[in-house]
Length: 249
Image (tube, rainbow, N blue to C red):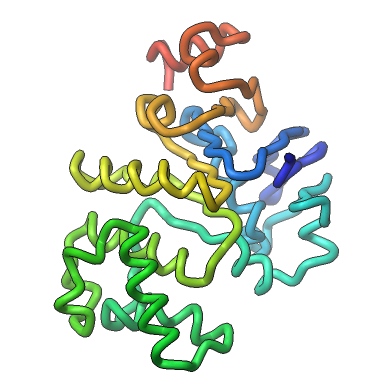
């Protein structure tokens, strides 16, 4: 089942053509890895999916993006869309609040007021993000006191708290140690049962470990998309092979 589809997607930031005629279908509850060198359009594509590019006055787009067949730029408000599509950034950005308040911030904005329900959301989200056992006795302490890896998992838990359908990751492990990276990758692997996930990463080994399919972007174009095992052993395009083998990037 197709969850997300981009058809003839073109994006500009003033005169910069950031995405060129992208056609891609992303399946329900898959992990899609997106790889490619810097300035290849990976993050621009990701930010189109939850309309974060709308905040940039230089942004212009042609083509369509649909989720479950619905055009997200015509038939869904940005606020509702961002509840359905969570995003985790390269640098963790916890709110300047306590650990528990970080988790409840989203649900409360969407109308959840019952204290018992909010406590259930806190525990569930932190457990899913592999953080509960580390913080359950200090939920009222400032989130900024957590380590970098813990802050990133808190940001994932905060995303899960509003029960999205889709989770976008923009290089979520780029500044983390191997242990924190492994915990986040394990969480992503388990999330496959509930969420569609798209992982932009500069770490080709991470894409090989985590994603079921991988898309290779180069100079604003989608060069190819295929099963990850096939792409990393027998890519269809020589440019993909050159990137994966480290000849450029």
